[in-house]
Amino acid sequence: MKAQYRILGQLKKLDEKLYRLNFELEKIPVEIAKIEAVLATNKAEFAAHKNNFETHEKTMRKAEMDLREKEDFIKKAEGKMMECKTNEEYKAAQKEIDGFKEQKGNLEETVLLSMNGLEVHRTQLKTAETTFKEQDALVNKDKKEYDTLRQKLVNSYEEQEQQKEGIVIQLSPDIAALYKRVSAINKGIAICITENFGCLGCNIKIRPQLFNEILGAKAVHRCPSCGRILITSAAEIDENPMAEVQL
Ligand SMILES: [Zn+2]
Image 1 (tube, rainbow, N blue to C red):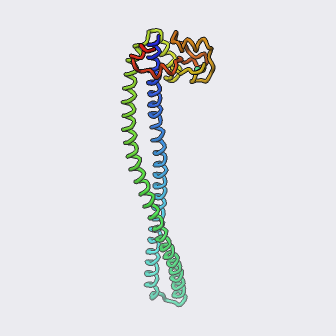
Image 2: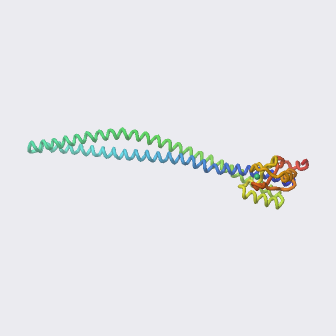
Image 3: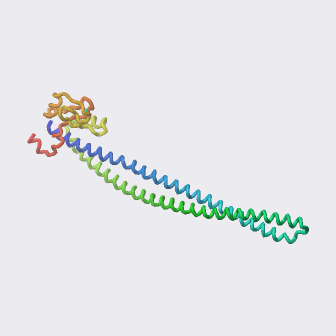
């Protein structure tokens, strides 16, 4: 039974390693989601600035077109001035030209303001684009690193699993079955240390008789509270097969 306890001790260590490896593996997609969320924000900002810039540019082009049109009107109206037969017609034509000139002045102001505004939007767009591109490159680099890490962790996990299989078959069939059953319902953590009449897994006190049986490696017991298999820390530390002789 002491040998069985020693095997359980080895399994406990492996289970803890597997648990930690799994924990690290599960963290990876969460971390990737975080950096992708930041990237999505940068992308949305870039798209918004692009849209702003394009809308502003369209407004400016429209104002420029209106201005040219107005200049044409003025030119044509001025050309027709000489064709006026009466003073009334002449005055009316002059009034129309004055109106066009006023509109032209307003449009010139609009174009000028639009040009200045467009420059501001262009700068903002450039900054947003640079930020997005930098972030995109960073995210791709990070993802590659996470991929490498994931592969390393998976390899390590599989290695430990294989090692575990080799150890489980050393258990007696009934203890192996118990171990598998308890492991399945406890997220892979089937074994706990008992110390000073207590289970270190759930901190409950156990009966002295039970504790002594575990201490003396008389039988394999489960914690009456958390249901995990209890071993002493001595079984966990003892990895030397020759140590059984000394026990
Ligand atoms: Zn317990």
